[in-house]
Length: 103
Image (tube, rainbow, N blue to C red; front, side, top):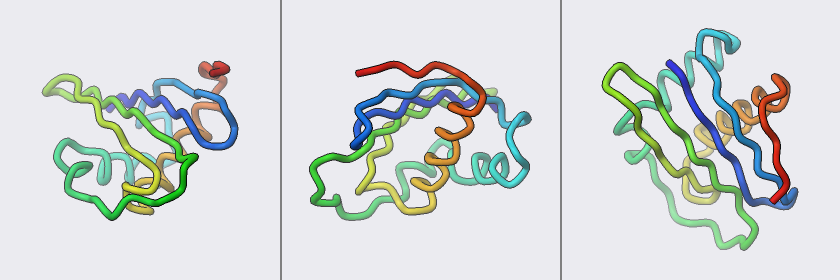
């Protein structure tokens, strides 16, 4: 599965964007992508918003056999396991030299 990712906000002031193939990710990360980032699953997991003002937002696009779906994941709203996966995917994008742009 192909995943597009755009992370913005937070203290850094940077927007990081890139596209990853799950087949190119470490096996444990790819497995969590398949488990946690599937249509319907992202909207099932919610918690109360965090009162912090400077939060990150992730736009995740999933390219599947059924087509393309896009989700917004907000720090302070999404569960910890999804936020940890987002951080790992951002690190993969940066390490692979995809695009990084200043806000």
